Image (tube, rainbow, N blue to C red):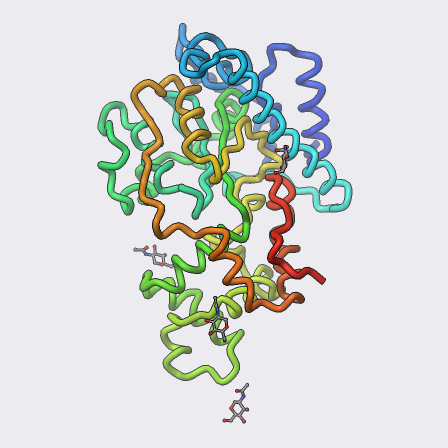
Length: 357
Ligand SMILES: *[C@@H]1O[C@H](CO)[C@@H](O)[C@H](O)[C@H]1NC(C)=O
Ligand SMILES: *[C@@H]1O[C@H](CO)[C@@H](O)[C@H](O)[C@H]1NC(C)=O
Ligand SMILES: *[C@@H]1O[C@H](CO)[C@@H](O)[C@H](O)[C@H]1NC(C)=O
Ligand SMILES: *[C@@H]1O[C@H](CO)[C@@H](O)[C@H](O)[C@H]1NC(C)=O
């Protein structure tokens, strides 16, 4: 009784049709030892009595989420339609993909390491590096801090990345995991996949980032992808070219050896959007708007806003175009295949600068 993709989605649909009150997804995270069959949603650590959860606000908005938009009904319905379309796009892509892929995978706790939990506001945020994740982690620290912080920007960036500062879903028991997946509002933020990739490359390999990162990945990339590399380059791994980085990503050895580093791993593999039914898909292109909508649904929109920040070093579409100029169309095509599901699922069109074979 391990439900694959299709079963889970079918359950989802039935759930939506049959039970008007059934919010969110009906996800069974089945582990190899099937503890939960005995006690599916056994532990009940619920609820903020008397106040509505973000999930209720999202699917059944009240005045609370209406009051900040104007003209209220029109804009709210537009937002609701937009988010429904984004969810449908994910569901449809998953369905089409499961029809061609025979991989039937079930989630294990280690798949949930990117899902940050806020019990006080009943939120689950799947963080994707290079998609405003530092600022969102800061916000999650404010939200879970019980008054410890008020301004997200007072939290240093490196502190936002200390894993002990935020609780992730894999740290809970199986019944607790299932309860939270069912009743919390689950959201993530996505970005145009190649722009995210160039951003990761620039951040990790063109700046003096971190010597152990260069040693860990840079030396491997140089060793594999550069003919006649100098001893120094082999030792330091700090001058990886974008062409070499791309060659490393499309090399079948790379993913066979170990999963991609999270900075260039697909959203599909980090957040499992075909198994976990995200209630809200935020986009980097509309970051502030989507972020503030999440905060509003969480009931904190009146005093907590997404931090605005200087975007001068941001990777842009023009920059991405530049970087891809030097990549052969064969490699572009293979790279697109690696990130294809992220493109389709989050409705990003094939970039016009690509010369696909
Ligand atoms: C996908 O993108 C196109 C073009 O940008 C847009 O017209 C369409 O509404 C989007 N669909 C979804 C589901 O977001
Ligand atoms: C540097 O990179 C290594 C290898 O990925 C990583 O484990 C470590 O946390 C990084 N250190 C800092 C300070 O970012
Ligand atoms: C590598 O070095 C050898 C010997 O110096 C040379 O003959 C060869 O052409 C070089 N190959 C490349 C790809 O630069
Ligand atoms: C493209 O390749 C040329 C020649 O090797 C190099 O000078 C240039 O810096 C490369 N551009 C990018 C964006 O990597």
